[in-house]
Length: 134
Image (cartoon, rainbow, N blue to C red):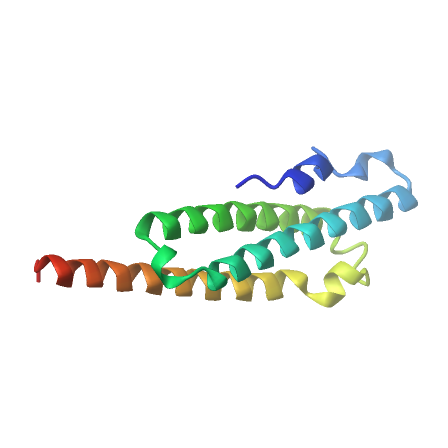
């Protein structure tokens, strides 16, 4: 699952090198917007997984959904690290740091991981019972 919108927004480097304070704030605003977009992709992926019918949730389905979610999460983490490394001490009053988006997304991601793992284990146990391998 590629994050097309987010990948089009991605700068290779923040605008920190430009040297003007308004450019730094502009870059931080841009990165914060990317984080909000990526957070929405993560929330949407979790919601779609939860809405999936039980009979559709196979081991492969769960694995693929988890891999897509993991890619989004790693991208979200990478960008958060970038924001904190370049801007945390200079722009600590910025909305990104005040709203604690990272904590919220991390909590939802971790809960989704637990849910997917539980569903996977349930399927494995059910398959083992059906084949009589216990």
